[in-house]
Image 1 (cartoon, rainbow, N blue to C red):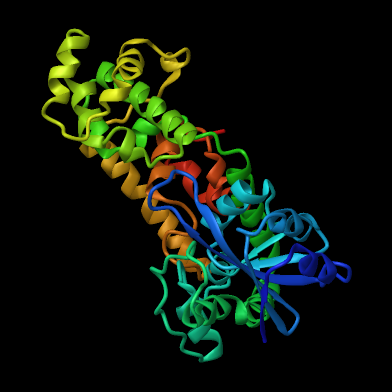
Image 2: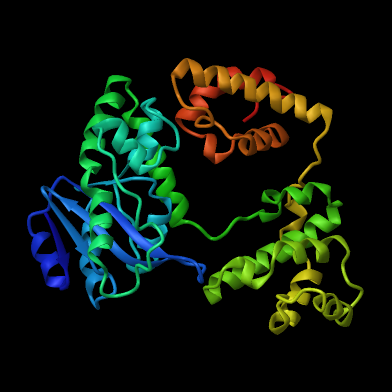
Length: 363
């Protein structure tokens, strides 16, 4: 049974007898903003499904105790963007978190499975996908939207039970708890990517000085996007950023001439962009460089990937769950274990990867 919650008092009344677990999902809009705009919260509580309108004054405040009560397990599916939406709207994150997508991967059911596919796999129920591109900020919501929203939490408890049984049987519950807390911590402490140039494949073809200019521009872009709540591409697109980094204009007027070839160039932000391009960052001397692929490092990465794949198969886990290429490249280049490979992943990988690293014995 689904209930449309229109008053914060209704949510507060139900919290007087908090359950041991709730199912959570959100609908949000992020097409024209940097931060997600929370439009609907779906909560499964016992046999009820609550459809909570966060646009109503006081509703997010009434929702916050549910999120922060650590005696209540929050069951969610592929929660990363929902967490950002909760952080923005409520200033709180749902702890402890049981992410059924992560749990299904750790349990060997499948990696990166969508909610509909996982529900079908575990319960045999086929769910419709009809309202994925709805305008969730519009009111009133249609009956079709409400039914779709309710479906998104109706089967979370069934997934929770089935995945928990498999994880307990393989002694991997702690793995899931660790991954859930790591996900929460990444959202909680998110201040933007520190070395964003490394995520752009094109940067490996730039000279070191050009990479530093690209780093300055991308850091500036991220700060502008966050403060103005606009998509990054609306501030500065990748093509123009790469051009300015690769062949920097001789002066401000030359940069404005380059802008003339780009209809969406940030003309109103030209002066701060020029300053970002030309003023060194305090920490850019520490910036790692994106390295072009060579036969040597390609072979080294391939050896690491093969070792990871073998260990992945031995554990019965989906491909890619133990370590991504990006993290292996960081490990190979620095000799230091990335945070993403800490905990149980390092325990599983260190014995097989350390002999393959330069000067074996990375720390």
